[in-house]
Length: 313
Length: 288
Image (cartoon, rainbow over all chains, first blue to last red; front, side):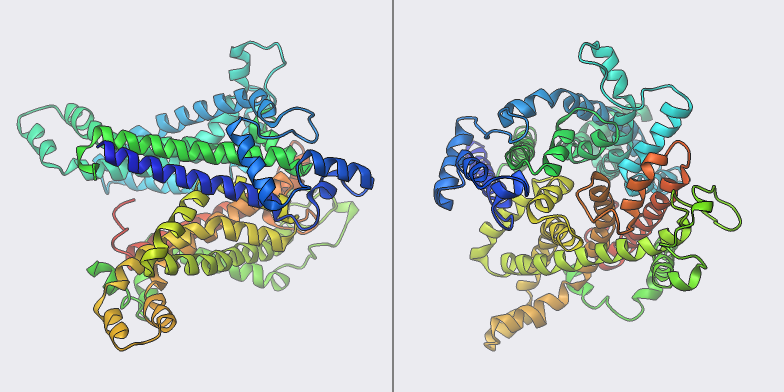
């Protein structure tokens, strides 16, 4: 088991190294001088040169790569060009709305998807199953920003139940801030529930035909206990996997959703960084998001090792 | 394995017939065909011009003359949705082509050459770690915003998915007797790859391509909405929603109908993809 864990750890380290390299390369595929591109056409040659030095763009590619890796190990992702603060600080200051948005929408997605997925598998092939499977496919076909705009129009503008945008003022209470997140989280939750539902259904179908489920039934256990205590408990691991990966992927949805609802989160920071060509911020955000994804994946792998003795190869 | 091996023979001319025998897949196929035809024949279908300004008719609600209303410059929304479909569909289709080309090369190399498998697969894993929209906007930011770069960026973003599918099939096909026979006859490797392997991965490619087509339509719209995609002057479903946003309160039809066009098209593609997968790739048809 220790050997298997070590194997996964090495695999993860390799993938992480490639992620770092990809992030380094992406910013350097810019045609022309990134410093000149960032400062725009009005910049003087001296300004461009100064920025080149500040970004370490004056060295060879290898020197740049080494100093970039060194920075990562020191927790230094560089300086934002426009915000005048370190990239890590800029990301940290905007982490809260994104964090709550992700948790909140994940909770909504799971609350919608889990019971529906279980029921669909239980009544497989019924009208309910077919209706819910179609509904999931429909939800996965809706552009999240479009759904968000319709929600704003309906629930914020017409009905006035929720704020149209923003995250409350700087001194707002946690309750007020979460209230601002209801519409964005519902939007994101609905759109991402489709995947969780499909996985729950498939995972439940796998276990519902297993011997221990039949045994539980034949000893006269109530259907509810059979489904929830025996089947769902065993189907839960693959479901947790997809929930975990959805959490990492929600950042993609957060980018769009935060823009729709003007939430001052990481997604919003990334979009403005892209529009202002603030490369250090783009680079830092890419690295952290992809790094998180790799870590979540690794954690899930480890969880499997712990829970399921069959995967110890 | 047997299922995959036989999937090569499933490409018989009656694939279409068998597809049409499944209600949901048939619905998907018919709808996507209609959408494509409507986009191609847009000039014949509508009496209006997509760019003709008409200040008198601006922000008209849907009526007999303008079925889906007009925008802030008096242009007919239905006409613009049809014409925008040309761009949205061709961008998404180009993304499928680009991601297939990259994915086929990576997948064949990883699946066929044992030594290349580990390094190529790790690169694919690493690329899959980036959420699609995030990687796409970073690439567009680096390359510069243009339709060509949007296609290139999204092509790169979806290439790993294609590569995984091609790799998985190649791993199986590599071990089949006819590939072994070709090797024994000293057929050059490139010819084995193209004639014997590639021809038999077309089914999973078709399935995956349909899903990427759907994802690319959503992603292009997302990029346009964020303002990092195709120029706002070119009507696509995404740029129309983005532009219609400011009139959301007074003229919701501006963003409602381009959005519906996306939903209908993506849904049709997903239904078609599901049907194709059930027919062509029985291994994966397992209820997911």
